[in-house]
Structure formats: C-alpha cells, structure tokens
Image 1 (tube, one colour):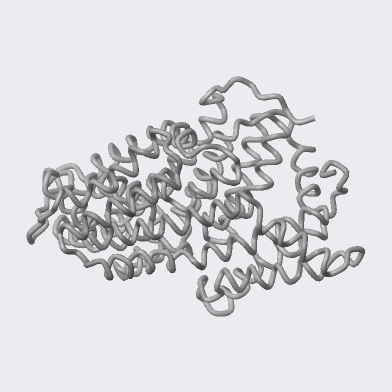
Image 2 (spheres, helix red, strand yellow):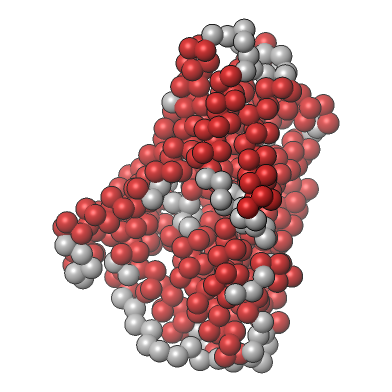
Length: 434
C-alpha cells in the first residue's frame, strides 16, 4: 500500500510552516526560542489536517492518531519520561557535583582545559543532557579561564564539546532514544557503532586542547568534596544499558537505585523522592507531547505523499548505499539548522531516514548513528542553539566567539564522513527493499 502512494511536494507544506515559524519568529523577535516548539508543531499539524480534500476530516484525524500512537512513538515517550525521572533523582542526590569535584580533584593543574572536556564527556554520558552538563561546568570553565588567562571562549568550547559527547552517546539522552526508536534498532548496538566512530574525534580534541593550553596552570579554589556512592546509579545505568538490559528496566532500576542512595544519605525523604521523580517526569512532558504531535503530522504528510516525494528526489540522486548514508547525514544537518534542536530534527527526519536506509540496505545501527552524529555536530556549533547560547550567556560573550574553538563538533562530523567513506563499521550487506 505504501508503495502505491504518489509523491506530492505540496504535502510537505506543514513542515515548511513548522520551520518558517521558527525562523520568522526569530527574525522578528531576535530570539530563536520565543516560539515554543509545541505551539509550532500544533500549528503545523493543523495545516496538515486542513489539506487533502479527498479525505474526510475524521479520516485525516484517524491517520494522525495512527501516527501519534505508533508503538515506536509511545515507547519513545515512556523512555523520555523515565529518563527525566532518573536524571532528576540522580541530580538531587548530588551525583553531578560529585562527578565534577572528583574530576577536578584528580586532574593536574596544567591539564584543566583538557580536564573540563573529559569531565564534560563523563557528566553528559551519565546525565544524558548537554544543557545540564553546560550549566554544571560552565561556571568552573569561566573560573579556570580567569586564572589561566586563556580565552573564556576556549574554556567554554571544551565544556560544550564534552556536553555534546554524551548527548550523542548516553543511553538516557533524548537524541539517542529518538534515533534508536525511529530506526528500530537496539540501544546497546547503536552505542557500540556510534562510540567507535566518535572516539577518535574525542581523543584528537583532547590532544588539541592540551597543545593549545600547554604551559598554562590554574588551581580551582574551594573545597571539592564528593561522595562516590552518589555516582554509582549513573555507572549502574551505563553498564546495564551496554550489557543489553531492556532500556525500560534499566531506567526503572536506575530511579530505584538513585532513590535508595538519596534516602540513605538524607538527600530527601520518601515524600521528597516522590516529588523529585514527579518533577523529572514533568520536565519531559513537553518533549513527549511534541513527539506525539510530530508523529501524527508526519503520518498525515506520509499519507498525502510528502515522504514519497522527498524519497523520490533523494533516491533519484543516490546511486549507492554510501550515497544513501550521505543523504541521511544531510537530512539530519539541514533539519537541525532549521529547528536548532537535535532531538526534534531526529524525530522529524527519522521516518524518512528509515525509508532511505531500507531502500539501500543501510544497517539501522549505522543510520541511527548518522542521524545522531550529524544533528549533534550542527547543534554544537549553532550560534542560535540552546547549548551555545547558554554557555555564551553565562560568560557574557558573543555566541560567535565560541565558533573558532568548536573542535569536537567539527571533528565528529569529520569522523562521520570518514566512517561513511570507508564503510565503517562494515556490516553484512542487507538486502535493499524491493
């Protein structure tokens, strides 16, 4: 049935409306985040439901609900909510402070910028959020810059780079969850593929920061106490996820483990634990609603021929699996440039990337990794992206000042391109869809 749908460029109008709402509002208000994503997606969904007069309105609503209720979308939302509960509980017990202080305590004073990057990598892969990592580490980066005389933009670029490392890899990162669910693959399998693609980029980034700051020394003042027990829930989640335990079981266990630690060290009582878990879930509600609305909208666009239209145009230019992988990389990059949100760009582009990968036999582990790598690369360099804006705002510098030092976001794109060019990792070739 899907193969009989004719391509229709006009069916893409809702996506155009969605993107123009962001760009147009940003130009008018000089604030890229003045238009809430949920509002933009609802308006775009309304446009989608108003199109195709051959179908009754109720039929289009049924198609929308089918897309919103897709099992991948619902599972993604469950994971989002549990990830929010775990992240909030782990933060409340002091896990973030412990990780930061542990890193600062063991790093030599001439490697503090390199250390910022490495601590950022560990915090972000543990927390699953680039923004949380930046908020935790940026003030320390600014202090190190003041003591060493290095440019604040350099120190903050190290923080952003480390933040994007985990945002791209963490088992509880919303981008990882979205990439895995839209490509119908396993979390641990995507992690293994993704990790070995970006690891060289992380190593080279650390070496470059070490060379740039050679001879600079600083001592971060104040006490840096940490409790190793508070880090254990993060380590438990990471190990269990890599071992292949079901992600829902991993996250429920993580919340339970962090809750036990919090009760043990008196971070909260039972009522405080309930409040913290509830707060974490509420923090993901917007993203859950956005996933529902965009899932429904994409299904209507697909029914009207929009997905087939794009697929036809891409496939007319793609002649090989390598070309298909570059097509997915370009799709992720363009969508992130348009939305300034790597999670939303993956949710929007994921279904199309899945179609392309099936058509040309791209392994879903590779397509999920490509989506995450290239959307993350663009996001880490975007002057109007939340990560860059937050870091620049805390240091009172221009977001553009960070771009010359954005080593890691550039290098993961390079690593992604190299992986496509040399067909790494090499999987047993899948049969392309007939």
